[in-house]
Image 1 (cartoon, rainbow, N blue to C red):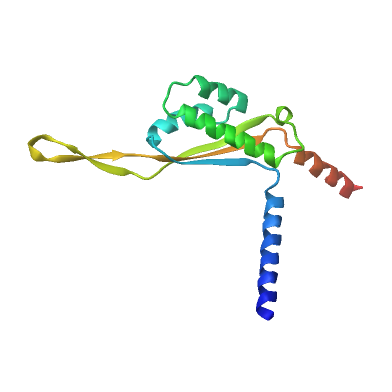
Image 2: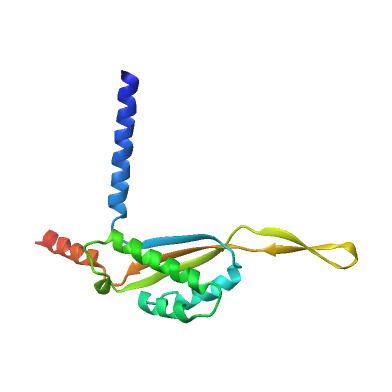
Amino acid sequence: MEAEAKKTKKSVLKREKRDARKEAAKGGPSIAKLKNVPTSPRKMRLVAALIRGERVSKALNILKYEPKVGAPKLEKLLLSAISSWESKHQDVKLEEADLYVKEIWVDGGRILKRLRPAPQGRAHRVRKRSNHVTLIVDSMNKPENAEATTTEKETKE
């Protein structure tokens, strides 16, 4: 009996903690990650630098017409981040939010090592690189700031 009570108690506590984390995560920036992209980090960083700090609409246009290899993948990642932001902020319209790419960075991923035949019976190692991309989207118009100013006014009165 006690073991069952402890289990239910633990599960209830876990659920409450999870709900509290979800409430704390509501609002604020949205993070999207793309892992094990089979292009070199150096090539992906060139594309990431194009959209860093840009408004979301402009960044999508840049990525749509960019001929570099990583552009379509970053475009999908940006759309995913926008969708995540919308699900976090259901009460705010996307047009009013004025979203922008707050941060974007590219880290090196797993390196696959392959052998390529070389002259005189030797072999050279080919390093096939991959990368991880992290993208953070946030709103330029903060609705939370309006609430903070009203609470400050109430405390002064």
